Length: 219
Image 1 (cartoon, one colour):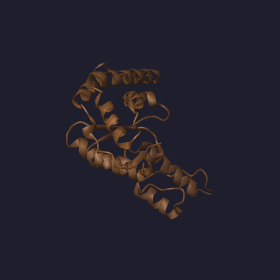
Image 2: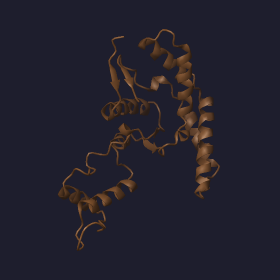
Image 3: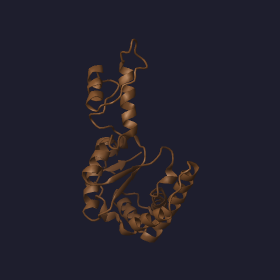
Image 4: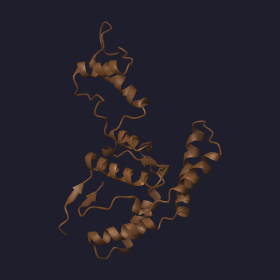
């Protein structure tokens, strides 16, 4: 009743990433972090130039990273701010670690798998999350924050390794279809490796930080 209503933002999300990464890596050797494209997931590193930076500052970044600046907008071979930003954008498309969350996860030895935009079917977690939300909705008759936490943990703990394998298998089938459309053949052992990883990572809600007393909205 008196819980503060808080919207998720990049700083709160990054705090969650630190706590969760520390907890999970303490218990599991192999960890992959699958993430969608919510705006607070995709905050660039502090040193990545923005359009409101000065030309001199953007130029220095390009020089420090040996970026090729193609003169497209300037006159007489002299690059403009837009030419420098085009070089930065090409760097962003090819660099492995460009987001602040990437830097955090890399510090824990975790690989970040960024999902393509508007493809929730590529995220295995969408299925158990949908199932869990439905079970919580059906059982939530008290409408208290404490009861909601209990029901959520119960619903997530009901996702067994066997059930998780089924969800992963569906995603791998979708991924294989997309890869085939691009003319890429995936060897059969790819799915076996993924299933072995899924079996080794029998996560429960004990792997995640306990919720605070404040209600957090991620939407």
